[in-house]
Length: 248
Image (cartoon, rainbow, N blue to C red; front, side):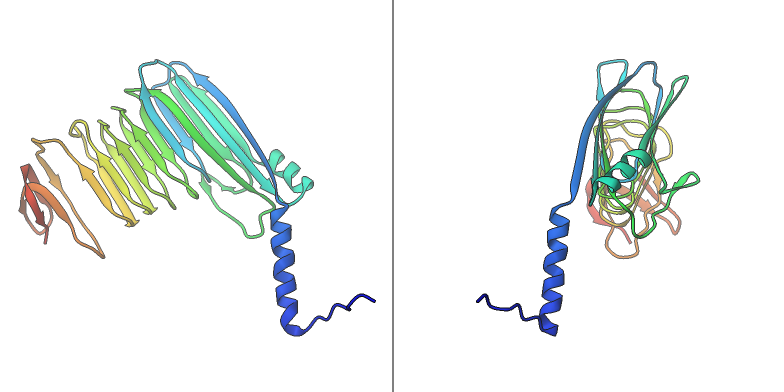
């Protein structure tokens, strides 16, 4: 005779957890990759929600985009719903190209999430662009934004991830909430530039000969510059490279 299954109050929780783990292990995944090419682009907007954006300058004149899309769901019906609802919207107007991950999570021009979503989705963008293109890049979750070698204007926004720009020129804004910001310039900006993070380190490097009014602010943590600086109550005026000094 087989031993009976004895369930006590303490074992109900363990049984429930085991069943939950088993259900999670059976999650379905659908992964696809798509390549897109656009000619005559002067400005590129990528409006992502979940996933990374990787942009690098090339010698070509077109914008080449590789999009990796991943959907995850607990059943075939949920997967079918994800394929129906989550789409990549493409718009080209003259020299402007906009790629926007669209779905029921959009609230007007922004993004809102509701509890109990029936599926998960992720878009990762790898993009080759002309060097002088203007960039407007944004993403929210499971996200990192990387830009290399561009010389145009930029507007880079993240929420739960870092931003790194390497050997860039131009000017603009680089803002995130939870993550670091690292921007070494190949040439000093010729216009206003802004760099912000709420929970992360800002590491911005300029070339010698910088002559600019710099406003630096922190709530928790120190601030440092390796430029000679004259400090007023409102701004820091940076002029030539010097030793590392803490700013008041």
